[in-house]
Length: 110
Length: 115
Image (cartoon, rainbow over all chains, first blue to last red; front, side, top):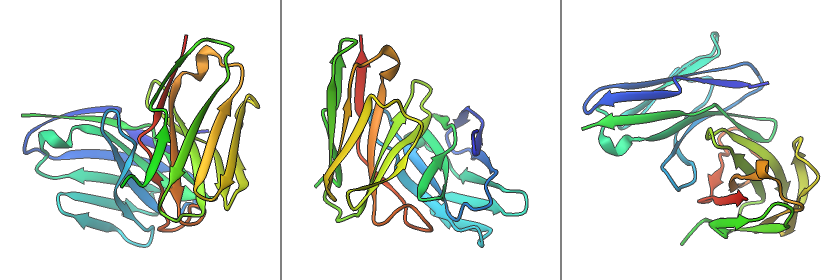
């Protein structure tokens, strides 16, 4: 059973555009929602994270929007750059473990 | 100064062989994990140790045996390797078992290819 569902599987955006990745979760016991960024040949690295009692968190060009009642959250990347091209994973923490979504391959064209 | 380091980075071996992957963290964390990333890049937890004690053991074949000699090290031994074991294996650590804002730090991964 996939507890965190992520879409789209892949996303192509032009430089300067907005990238939006969506996630939905089922387990209401999850208590923290991080996003990880993974470049080829590297491990996932923490990008930004949010608590479920907060509706939005912004760090630079990256913003998480969180809808607790709908059990959905999303990552917005403003002014997307070619260097943002990577795989993005939403995740949820609960039960002493980090559960990942399926990942989104983001390509930002110059 | 690598926070979570894994060796080897690449491992190519024949079916039926036994191999090990080693992991060390210098973050002073109490909890360590093994995750498996398949060819579709899906990341799934395999094991977790807290202060050398096994706390998470997912439905992983018993050919996989983790060992934590101390808090800073977590090794993964795989017996009788099968083609389906080909994947990238990530070690990770956190200060305490994942909860709240206590997120995981990942190593660079060990790519295992079984021929």
